[in-house]
Length: 318
Image 1 (cartoon, helix red, strand yellow):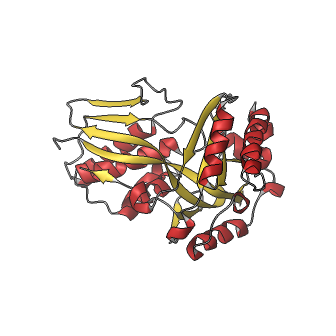
Image 2: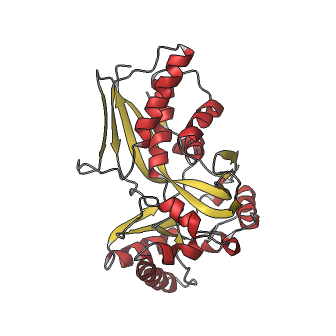
């Protein structure tokens, strides 16, 4: 590889996230409909004698990664497989630049998106003999959300997140709405997702019906609304994440003002993934108005995003 190879790493949004129960192995089974958004990181890969992975924002400022670098782990795993299979194709060195737009540790799958994009990029740039199924199997060893980000939504994920079923959504169900994403500046536990799972009680578990209904709406080409979206973690989020409750009130007020100005019922903001981001699915004009309203008093980031097609969500250029 001599030229720079590039890939997109879109944010993952769980439109539905139902935790079904705890398994004997300690994991939880879930059922979720996922889309990917045009709020996305961008990866650039080029040759170098030593390995260098950098994370920077659009202003070229370093972005700190809060836990072990999942992209580094993916690269190491590829090297292990290369040695075992004798490909002699995966270089130990290289320069990978990640332009971060997805907020870190925000419930939007940013780390998994970056790792998945790296795996797709490495497969193409280094001509690795890995189809999507093999790449997903590899990704699942590193992180439960990575297979969903490798394949690109819309999709339905189950098991602990590694079981993927494509949802053949009609174009009409992916247009006519946008997503408001508000990520508050509040403390986030280092083991946030595990903490959220530990906070759940059996009364918070779902049965998958809401996820099945949402997937059916996408296949039938019906418009989505906030009422179609669910998240089992939402019931315990305000008590588990310090500062989320007042942040939720600020988002709710902005949504209410924007919705009422457009003659629709105000929606309640919903937790994105394991949080702390909150989201709302609404007509684009309402989302834009809510974003303007929210930015006046908000401490954190505010994004307006739209869902991507599967091709857009998995773009790679070499």
